[in-house]
Length: 115
Image (tube, rainbow, N blue to C red):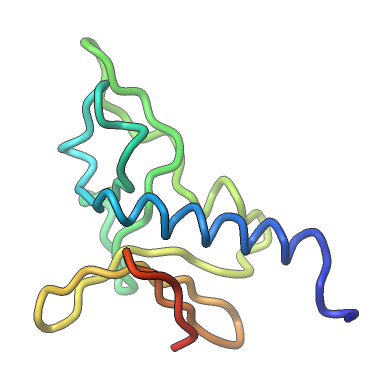
């Protein structure tokens, strides 16, 4: 079991958290409010890359501010070992893609799958 360590466990915990929040829904950050900011996954629709939209981790949402402070990638991943993006397929089906150096995990409201 040399391949499992605390980083593996933390990654699995994060993936399971994304599945739970995906059950509530995934929304563009422009729809984040003080009332809903803890219940949904928000993606930064202003920061689209060729791989999709980064997931917002740190944010300020109040009467005076509506700002992205950090993305999930920045929070969990200082070594650029993986990226986490909201993606849309050709039928506009939304899913979360967790891209590792050697594979891809897709996450939606039903669970996570090795792609």
